[in-house]
Length: 172
Image 1: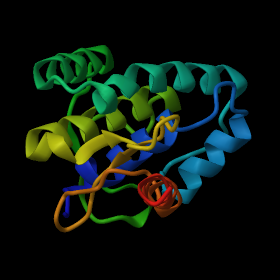
Image 2: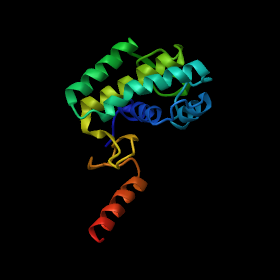
Image 3: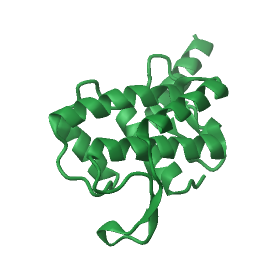
């Protein structure tokens, strides 16, 4: 499934932040943002890392809550916390695109607006595309971009573990 840029990359960055280890160092956050081609990046300071991980904790229920009304309330609370103001930007030689925080704003403020808006787009387009891994004991979240929208696991490794365990229990 193809989401618009906010429902796609912004939601993927939300996934990456939510899936980071608690207490992840600023360098790990910066590397994750670079891997997702987030610009302008700059340096992630220790205080910013703490704030982004705290924000990730607020993002998590959007993936894990099965109740759509609660998911919508959570996203609305996230959007309200960003106080975003949409405008068109052309930074870093990119084509015109919509921003929900000015590229000159603080990194944390920009990422909050970006991720909240990305999750809002996914919720509005197809809320069933947000989920948490179906393997017991795995709490990794994901955005399902598959064609048929039937993703249940964070990765093939978790799916294989569940299927192998099921096979073994049936043939024991």
